[in-house]
Image (cartoon, rainbow, N blue to C red; front, top):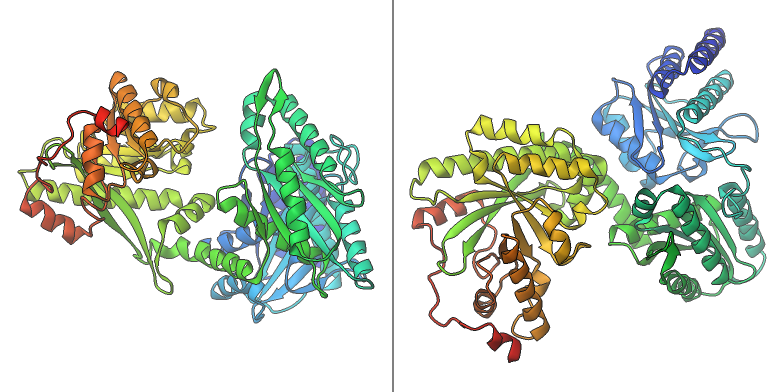
Length: 629
């Protein structure tokens, strides 16, 4: 390892010099990675550092495929210590620094990563956590090797040196915020992650000798970032102090409450007899948090998601933490404000999701996506006025995957950007073909597409839309873009400016699922939208619930006053259609009118003419009939 020693000295001098000069983090990481690649023959290196409040930023070797990079990023996001990884620990005697995973491993926990690495021609993965002695977990250093082997003793120091320099570079960049103590949180005084893990390990050892089970609860606040960004750091700290005090008061004297990171807390429970004991503690915490918190002369409300894991005879501290984090991730993906208890079924579901994340990366190039279109009509005439493009994924193994399952994954991984670009291009191309083929179509017939929150934050969005419309020769006035209320929460002026740019091009903007988000009717006047789509939850109770009719009439009245169009979603019966029209809603879509149609189905529909439903004779002229009945 003489060459490794020489390289260690060279990179140490080089990195220290770069740090003194204030070099960007990316440059320092590149220098460290290059040294590792030069010593570890045939290797490829990926460094993933977690930035608080934003997404992990990888510095990757160009020899790593997108599939491997995504698999490793996904693994790194879900785990925060080497003990959570399936594999063989390596390092100096009694002090492992990382884990070796052989690509011939059949452990289900590492299968997606192992398969991706194997397909790329590598036979080993070395995973080394980057841990700051003061702030804890910072990220991961992954090395993929062509040989099936563990690191040699001389390579331990090289890997250790690399992670230490990554910590120093991260501190200088401001990623790592130093605390007064690495053991206890400087803000709340609560134990930190290291102390919590030590206590958890000791609790498991005790309960191997006595009855009862150990439980871990991990909680994370659903919208803390909104409070932190809108009210400031001081207000955010005040909220954290308040919730820490409330949580402590809701626990037993011998329970341990710890702050793991910004707004993530963990609770250690001992002496549990069954799952229900842990659930009762969780429900008490949910109740104590469900009270307003006064900060800077205003009240704020917080909800939290909870993940619960209970020990078995063979549980380790790393096992319980991993399982609780998995349960927390499932609770958050279900909308927040809920708890989940870890189970084998949940574990399988998470592994399935990880598999989907990798497969989604290749779905475009493998032509697994297709579009369906659902018409929107004028309720008075039955004339088609819009075709809403709906993305569908046909998975070769699982068949049709619901958009509610794969769209959140695409959002989280960033795959939504190329997928959204393809959706727009394909929908616009088909719209152009239909307009050319059927000249009798209305001049105001529009193509409608949906934009997700991640797409709205994408800086190249407007240019992508302009370029695509020009390439397929579709006028901007033929396009309608739908966004949800929730996508506008916590958006800055940049996103609103982007929407204004689209309107200036002549593109119509619609607010989808209206009534289910956080905005109010008064908030509408400040939004750059042209149309409201009333959520189906209001429509489905029409004729049975007078309150729903009153709400819809109010929405329609306010929309008219603001010069906005209104579309009713989810119309499934003739009665709902008649009621909507009587309440002043002019347009609608739903299964009663037409289900989502394949391309050939749309073509056949347009061949028959621009009208789907003929005008009804049995209309209710006075909305008061609905409100008084």
